[in-house]
Amino acid sequence: MKISNALGALGALAHETRLAAFRLLVRAGADGLPAGAVASRLGVGATVMSFHLSELAQAGLVEARRDGRSIIYRASYKRIGALLDYLIEDCCQGACGARTTATKENCDETAAC
Amino acid sequence: MKISNALGALGALAHETRLAAFRLLVRAGADGLPAGAVASRLGVGATVMSFHLSELAQAGLVEARRDGRSIIYRASYKRIGALLDYLIEDCCQGACGARTTATKENCDETAAC
DNA sequence: CATTTAATTCAATTATCCTATAAATATCGA
DNA sequence: TCGATATTTATAGGATAATTGAATTAAATG
Image (cartoon, rainbow over all chains, first blue to last red; front, side, top):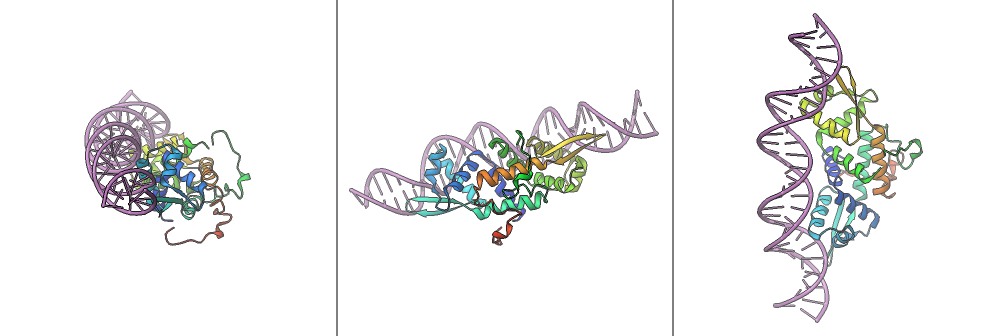
């Protein structure tokens, strides 16, 4: 992943509504959810949701497809995975690469986390 | 990690100068680097560097200590690790938790990443 | 104690982002 | 085709963030 892509993805996720939408779409799985469902589940208007979903799409974190009147969004697991790889490898240099789901027990959690 | 902390850390990293500074501090290791060294290595002015380092500190991603005239910054491995854990567990739900340094070979990279 | 060095803080400007409203597009069903 | 539904696009505003230069704090040195 290029640095400009990482910056775009980080910026896209650095917003309350967009992070919530992305988490919702990850949980929705490969089928995704229509934009309206995302908006109503998050309690935001259709217009603002459309704006934020397109920001996520621009960053490559979600993909859109039309299904009749609805536009279905789904999370790009490949893209979020690439971002995580970038952060772990290019930014952590192994210092926190061990703190993944595979080897999480190496870390002592604190309340501050 | 709480969602507000994750948002703060994502926002702090979503800036070219700050991401570069954080990467530099990660590579500098536990000893860290004085603010002036970070500024000159990145080719930015002392004032703007100070601003961005304090943003990173506010997000908990770096820590500052005074050493004589210098103020030494170092990366918080705990904090970046906590952010990665949050993204992997709360946002990926296992869909990309496998894409870590430990099990990276499961992923097919593309040019887009 | 005055000077130099290191870094921050303040104030002002500029740029960017977010929200809200209104209008437009696309699809479906009567 | 007409109206209803789903979503996007366009526009304008207000809020937030970033940059710059000057002033300030803090520590070391002669």
